[in-house]
Length: 460
Image (cartoon, rainbow, N blue to C red):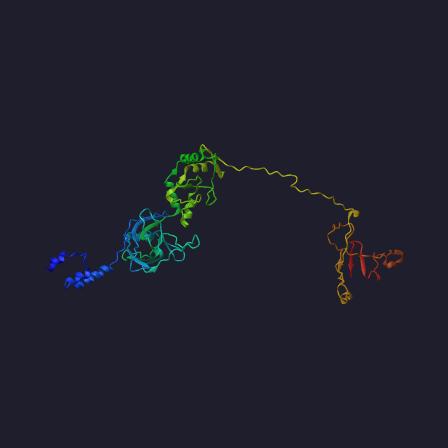
């Protein structure tokens, strides 16, 4: 009877508590079941362990093997602020041998490897190949050792959060180069709402810019007719435009190094005719990979670079010009600078008047004589009474010597010699007649001795 009544009872009309009351001995079981049903939460969507994510290829690295496939960094409900996940990989004996052979010792005890173990992060997006992108607050430990991450890039605007530039990480120096011992990678990050990241590890070989230039040459040279068709398209008159372009001037100098082009190239995605030097462009991206066209500042990936055959012909034909001009029919002509003749006008040349030099005494101006040995009147009485210093020698300036023009200070002492009549030899004693100059003392000759030969005055 109870069973029939139980069959006629609709569960929707009875509460779970009442049902448990009818079934004796099952009350505790149903009660615990009800409690678990009330506490159960909807499980979040767990991202796939290995999503179908493709990393964008790097021009300077050849992938030799995949050590860890792209794996999702799924968020865990147990850890709210920081997530942590561990990954393990092992190397084969062949891989260990390739890494060890490529080792190069650098100054300072550092080691460099051409074959590297590379760690990469990206968004878990399957729509297109993904670029390197780091999660927030990323921390990496390889075999228990902290791996240093690249620094933060400067923020483009004020208030924008700083972001690390995405690039592959070379963890070869922290990896155990042994096939018997596995390697462990611990990744710690801060989860973001609506974003899921993936991590992968590759065995790669690093390339150089000369090797990439050689590969670019092996791709072939674009037909010159293609560039001529592009020139005609650009110079074709537009009926809706009031301005018509009849010629186009292009430089043969590289915008990067300001030097003459050697390997002219540009990206197929660029709409301009101006080329840049492929060798210099690859060298710059080897140091800092940006892959930005130096002409139009747009993306110019290595896969889209082409060598222009028309510019190669122009560079081979004319080696003395740095600029050319394209015509409407696709032809070109060199642009040589015009040499302007330098004309020297008579006004620009200063006139120089020659003044004849006269040695006549009448044309010589007398210069004012200033005695610099005289002391100023502001000196004290004691200094005025002091005797001036004795003069040792002074050269007598003859009248025939040329005097400087005015504006030049000239010192010329004035010498006054008293007129002394010459003595008659008859008055001299016979013993002194042979002497030209009298030797007997005289009050005048004690102070001054006049030399008639050199016109020099000596003061004693």
